[in-house]
Amino acid sequence: MHADEVDTDVALVGRLLARQFPRWTGLPVTPVPSYGTDHDVYRLGDRLVVRLPRIGWAAGQAEKEARRLPGLAPRLPLAVPVPLAVGRPDDGYPFPWAVHEWLPGADASTAPFDHDRAAVDLAAFVRALGSVDTAGSPEAAAVRLGDRDADVRRCVRELGTTVDADATLRLWERFLAAPPHQGPGRWIHGDLLPGNLLVVDGRLSAVIDWGGLAVGDPAQDLKPAWTVLTGAARDRFLREAGADDAARERARGWALSQALIALPYYEETNPGMVRQSLRTLRELRADLGG
Image (cartoon, rainbow, N blue to C red; front, side, top):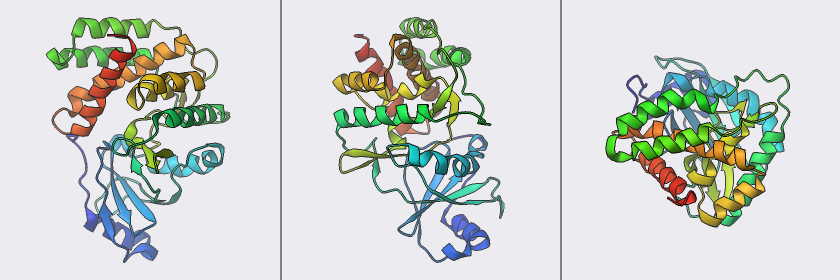
């Protein structure tokens, strides 16, 4: 998937556990299939999961989640990963890695769920996360929407006839022109895609993969309006989240840029990400009546 990714396998997980966390040796290790882009995930027994970064940009996630999630968890209405241990680079594997509690459920890219209920639950989650005090946070501020301009234009060129270049860039420029977020940045998850949302019995139950956790424009966490939801559920989510017109425009820009940047990068290696990105583009067109 990435030119410089690191390969992992069941045997490596077993060796790392034996060397660093021998209390968990002997438990069966099973790969967990997903179209995630930056970690390999292995179920460990019935109650645990091992997450190993496969690329350098994800190398700090294990420590970030261990540092931040225990404090965030009680303030959020959906479950989040419970970090149990952070492993060190070892046995030729170059990155810190993590053991978490296993969260039940299937991700929202495959499991059916009540979209209207999800709109309410996701909005409550976004409001709750955004209300957590950011004072003293060492996390780097999230990028601004305008920081993506060069990448968006490059990717539109690379996509050729996959998108209508002129129409797409007109939309992008419209979203860039939206008034910026006023006031201090807020906590954002940053990557609320279906693959990072778990579903149990038709209802959202948990939010995983917190590598994008940052302090920044809260409109970034409105992207589920187009990445997860549709139609009336989209409108309800935006209302329940308290999104004004400017936030909605910026959120469309965040969703559009994420899809456009992902498409050429993953077109040959990750069909799931391609499907997700094309869906986002369709939902944006539907939302705008195009």
